[in-house]
Length: 164
Image (cartoon, rainbow, N blue to C red; front, side, top):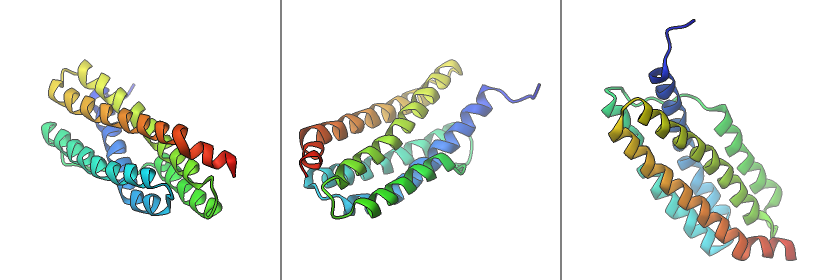
């Protein structure tokens, strides 16, 4: 048995989600520019600001833990974001582009929801109540964004893509 524990796993997962957020915030301008729906572009622009706040919150968590903010390379998120590039390339000038961009963004959001939910549960177990609150704030924002993207998809984007 190794001497690693839940604190170590928490920190490694936090590093992973930190890198994911940083990668996603760099990709959002590309995704926003590619979107054709004004409502979707607005949602992506708003989410970029929100993501920047989430990154700052993660940095606060590192500080509360007495650790330097550090990112851990995430091949999973890298792959998800490469998928958005492929959608942009393969579906440019297509009515299905926005539907693909929403799907791509929601894939990342669902990864984040899972990560933040897990980190929140671990923070609670480890007695990190301030950290738990910060993670809960981010989790709620991410779920709200996911619901907004679903609403945009269902109210217009998917219908437009299907009608083409």
